Length: 308
Image 1: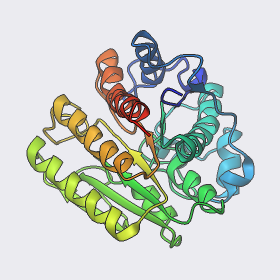
Image 2: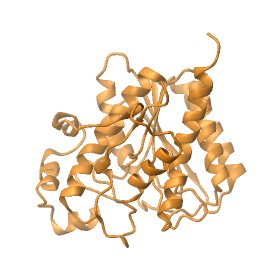
Image 3: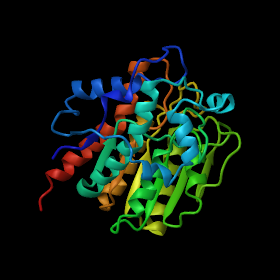
């Protein structure tokens, strides 16, 4: 089979065009991948609404109800920083099961990619940084209740620290959270991941790639994960308005290929999510988010033709 991809057409919906969060990017990403022949009816998997007990394992039931019924307090609404709508409600409840489905496909096929996900700022009972539910933490907890998954590694390369993921999984000994992020950037009050690698503002490709390589190799050796959830945020890109690093598009591609090749070469299942990216040029942003999928597809195809 070609590379399994997870997507739902309701990931994008009518949304204020001038809002900092680029809600249109999910649909634009899917459209670009169709044009490239990478997203087809044969390799597309569509998630359903996330099961309530999966959500309740990670998030506060009262908070979930307030979000669903649009009864968040004014303070909660400000922290969410997204205008509530029925479209937002639907896509928020779809995306976590999309990440879980991606992980399940990765366990079967070795690699799978989600055309959304990486909402790593969401906490137990409040939204933050455009993140309402934490798909990475939800997926990790569900996976760990499956007998064949004993250890999950979350390898987060978004430019912002995965503070919500760190907090939500701090009591889960079988999930290891690693965040490689720009230190002087949002969130300004950091949480403690199992491993935090804070990068200086302005770091460029060579130094960045060396950190990613060294960190991943160390964690594979120390943690021996059964699956890796890889947050391939593209807000590390030099021109991203919320980034502060100086990574080129070639550097983003080298990072994604490095991570995927290392894991796939060792037979470690890897599920990718797209994470953050905020370029005002939405088409360009969608193409940048496609990089991890293009690299996964190329590596998956290479492995498919290797002799037995």
